[in-house]
Length: 96
Image 1 (cartoon, helix red, strand yellow):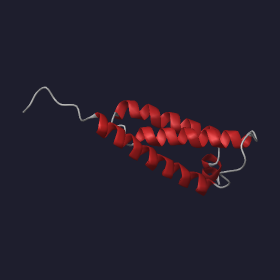
Image 2: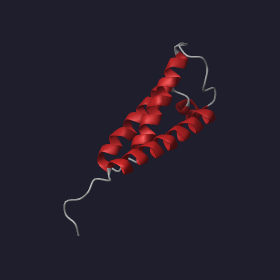
Image 3: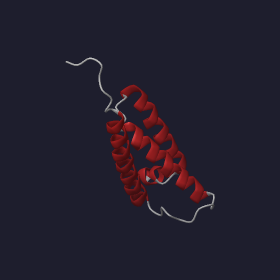
Image 4: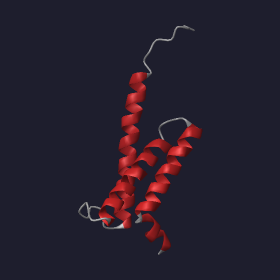
């Protein structure tokens, strides 16, 4: 019951997203914590807009909310990984 309340609360998702983005500062790999944090912030914003009735009901259940969060995190991770791989093709001045 408490887990369901937390996973369907916009403020909780915003806090989760910010904490995960802060954890990215200590990790620095840009593949795990940053996409999860950004998707958590997006889910929190969607839930907050639903609570204020500025957005129609898109996320109606905590399980659907967690599923969309996971899909967003995976998509953001793939996009970020592709950009980092393209950016990393500069030639090294030290040829070993």
